[in-house]
Image 1 (cartoon, each protein chain N blue to C red):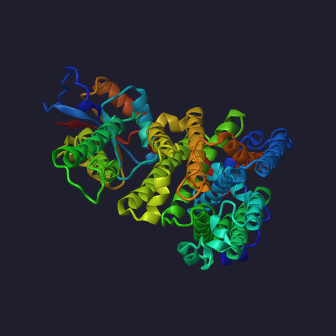
Image 2: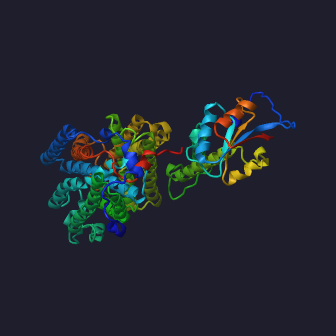
Image 3: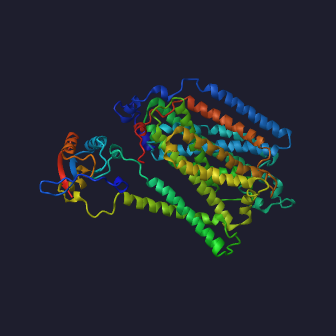
Length: 438
Length: 194
């Protein structure tokens, strides 16, 4: 920071700097959309999102399925959170490690990280409904559970009360979102300011910010996953869960990145700034995070299966019931979320061809939705009896589509209203000359 | 590298004035840029049995030399999967069929407990294939090479780069190859004896 602060602001670009010479070769039209292009898409999508959320609320209030409507909405909000956290984490990692190759693919990730405030807005209804309903889906909010005189007194809920209580829960919600929004906004803002001024020291500042942002975001994201997903079944605990969350976040984020880049290429944008070499590396990241998810998911399952402690293994026991359909989902995740995409993504041609990579990305995103449903939906049933996998699937789709539509609209707005790559980044020439050794 | 896979056709044997069999022709270059351009010329002339020797890795030389992808990746995948399958089968047979034993009340053939060994054997077989394939395709270990006799070749470990085209190359011709290397900007050209 001291270095960045004491350097005088340069009046303009040094015309001989390699990144300035590299920029001159780019076709400016391919690097941005004409103003207003995206609004044809994001305005209807945003309106649709609001309508879907209203419909979910209506269904929840009308019928007897308030719990499932709430749970489905929660799944949708978690899906947007996975992507925002993943985008934020990847931007910070790329900045911290001074990744020259990734400059031209960084903008969509910065956009993902910058819309965390939207996730907060989407989370507010959950917070309010949960507090005022006394724990519609977060059962530990029920005061009877921690009252020794009550017949439904739960010793584990009482033991965990210092952490799992409504006040502290609400405080943490504000703390997490405040922290993430700060980093998301700052990293986006620094990069956008660089687009205007070309000040190379903004890169150093982003790097400085990332150096302490990485541990802070990693810890808060892990605890957020404990709060919002693991605590749905408050008897259960898994020390692996934070990493499990991260594995899903990074995988789904890279899948969205691959998809966004493919769509932009399809629209005739980006030109040679993102070519097969960049796609190849994005594909490698997608492959590695698919493997990482498989490794972590199996690691979590394996240790719980081996030690067979009741309050740990109950979580998986619920999800291996044949009658409720969760066993089929369990097997679907083994093959669909890991084995099949793993074998498919091994091929070099798949990673270097936009359309083939997009197929993997879409497939993995669908599997990611199934994975989040697998975490959240069974916990909505009564104790010892999970909510069946196929129970009113339409309500699940309705509930999660609202937040996802709004989030997608915000992402399209962000991407179409600014340059598609950090156009004045001092490492631009490195990225343009990027080549894979193998 | 391809010599291992293809049987070389009967070839003309060239001899030096002193009557020694010619191994190939070597040309010396001073900079990475020069040798990269020269390598492109040799590649475009259609030579197949030749190599570049340099004191350090040169960026882009693989492309300049027209390297094709090796079959090692495919071999690694196939042998790795075979190893993983064998590992799984071995455990399934030993703990489930040959000598069933109750461990921690788990089923005899609990697939969960087989996964780590299956994974490890997959990695082991893949790593051995990669290492063994690399050695075999590079013809290593190699205890003798005709270039070692050349005085000029010593500087390849210091500040010179050399292209050597083998006489076993179907396109090798003493005069044409010399012309090609001269036009590529070689600072010196010599014949190499077997």
